[in-house]
Every structure is written in C-alpha cells, then in structure tokens.
Length: 180
Image 1 (cartoon, rainbow, N blue to C red):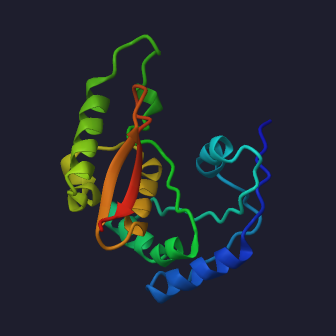
Image 2: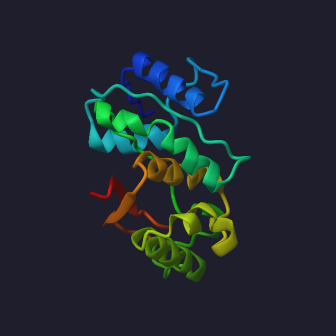
C-alpha cells in the first residue's frame, strides 16, 4: 500500500475557501476525512518524495463543464503570488477501456485529441479548450478538468508550454504562466 503522508494546509484551505466564495463559488464545503486523491499524491510523490510539502486539495465538479472549471481556477489565482503551487493532474485521453497493450500503436482517437489539445493550448485558443466537447470528445471529464483549473489559475493572460509528452494515452505535462 502506497502512502503519501504530506501535511495538510489548513490555513491555505481557509484562504482558498474564502477566495472561492468571494468569486461566487459558494458555499464551499470542506471534507477533513477524505484524504488525498491519487490525482494529487501521485505527481507529488515524484516531485516531493519526502512528502514534505503542505497540501490542500480542491475537487472538480463532474456535472459542470470546462468553462466552469477554468473560472473556478481563476478564483485562487492570487495564491500564486503567495508562493502557492497550483497543480492540476489528470489525463487528456483517460479512456482505459479503449487503451491497447503497450506494444500497440497509439490509437487514432487519442492521437487526434492530443494533437488538437496541444495545438489549442500552445496557440492560446483557451476558449476552444474550455468548450472541448464541441471540438473533441473526451470520455471522462473528471480527469480533464484539472487542466482547466490550472489554466485558470495562471491568471488573466495565461501562456501554455508543453514540458513533457509520452505514452499512448497522453502523459503530456503543461506549465501555465502569465504572459509578461
């Protein structure tokens, strides 16, 4: 059993809740017993193997859309200036039912979606990404919405940069910064 005993960040959770409620996302509920989702602890385990980073987790809302999550990400954007790392973790083509064996070629649907997403992000077509359902199908939005939150948290004029890409169902990593 893997464990990632990162300390909580109650002050950050309180500040995040305040920012979300000030932006109209309220009331915001808290869950002190859930523990970290694998979408939070897996990347952190590689980035901070000693689990010495305080963590506050924000849940996505699967009944909402990409634009909602982008706007949600804008609410805690001021935290970046307070030294907070906003990390969104998921998979652009998370459809395990259609995933082939490791030795099979990349499925065309996954390749097409990855190409569309990369091109849209790097060209700054964020409205297209927020309305991805109109442009490119995605089977499981809860794995995709963290990207929208992270993009929104980058501020008013975000800039996307592809920093890693591998594997058939998209282990692509993007860094979102503010254009200067």
